Image (cartoon, rainbow, N blue to C red; front, side, top):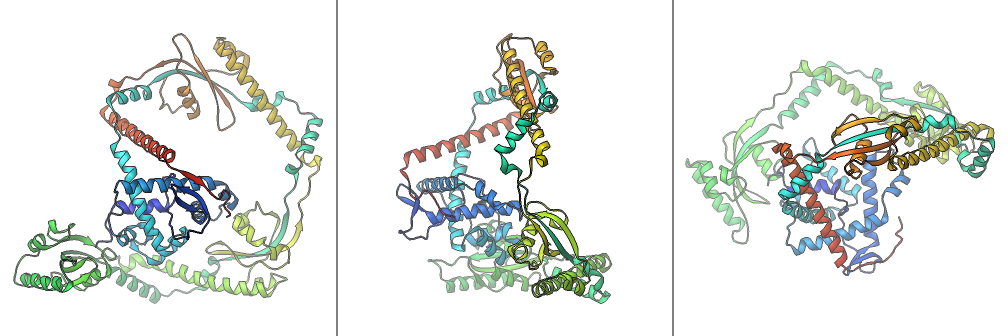
Length: 632
């Protein structure tokens, strides 16, 4: 009954929306006919082409929602692989079958409770039906298919938990891991910077010309546009608005009344279920008898513990705790909010059965005083009215831009706007109001650049828009060699410097492996060794990549050394030398460290076991592929 209850299912829903188990993919559903082409068959269970298409689009929408409006659609196509999606659906089919074989249950609560409890479907902490449906639509679900996906994912979540919960770490494994993780190493490294060699390499005119001839596509200018435009925003309207003190007072009183109507209530209830053993009529009669006993002076808490069939509250005398609106189902809430403190309701029905509810206490809302709120309310009213005016002006300018196709001046004259200009705007780059890719694509649409019309108003932000028209257009063209000579020279010098560094690095490693002295190698390269005696994995005074490489290298034998190399993010190379390694002392680890390491190892073993299950399921199953190229 309580929509605000927490459960495993709530986590499952969040997992569906932002799924972290890549092996599962997103929930899928089967309502397709047998005649549909299939992409894969798992022991005869077909995964249709349409299912794969839906899943691909769902994952793209999920990525796009994370990346925002600036998401590159071509990049999304590259990120969402058809084969990866198909593999995830195959894995899901196999895992779902395993979960059924193990009799794993679905949702712990009712579907409605899980949905209402999910913050992704709430506005200000209250379930919002329109948000729920729009979110599902964006993810490619119907309410029915979403419920099916929730049930399946609850089972799969339990399957994962089963492997995690049964994994364990032995004392020997803990000791070995602690010894390795707490190992210390004597390390030295030296940096080799490609930039230091650029002055030592020469680039000839012939090399520049050859590069230009081989890669002409790298030296084509992007098509550019000169535009004029007007932009307008909500801020333009604030001076036009008059907010009176009466307006502020009225808004304050309305907000205060709305807040006070949402006061929280402490309630207790008694529930009698309606089922095959008890009809609604019987339950109502029994509850009327209970109410008579209450009216006769018996204690509500005592009767609740004796008679209530609500497993969550019966043991505490029917206590439901302090709660606000949106916590309970509508029928229950309507009755509760009509009661006065201490009053007991008449018997009433919800989907859970027949109830008696007693209002124990009202927690009144303490609303701020008018003087404390008036400046905030005034600002809110100004902003709201300015937004309304902006939206009205947006519609009017849209109409005017369509009608006055050959100029922006009528718009500027009508609304006191300045006609501005921008030169050399391209589809890939812009500044100011044209910094956004969405805005650039909007003002450079076909009607503007090919037909010479005004653009429609393009929103820069929710409260700022621009209308533009074309003045001049410069086609893309091949840049001359003279224009790009220096650019090519810089690029070739960098390539040659990188090649030289690679040679130096390989030569240095070879010399060190052949027992040449570290000091002699340093003198030859002109670099300097940095020593790290008894370095640990947690050392934070050196680049992480160097430290990681130092502990990846095979530990050296006695009176020997191990050599490695790593390239850093800035392009520099590091030669890494390890001269000694000592295992960590298990006895020096604290109890907290041992517990943390045990948890980490157990999680790892659980993941490893689960991956083993997945490999076994795939190897034992008969998996056939059907349609190999799935259209978008």
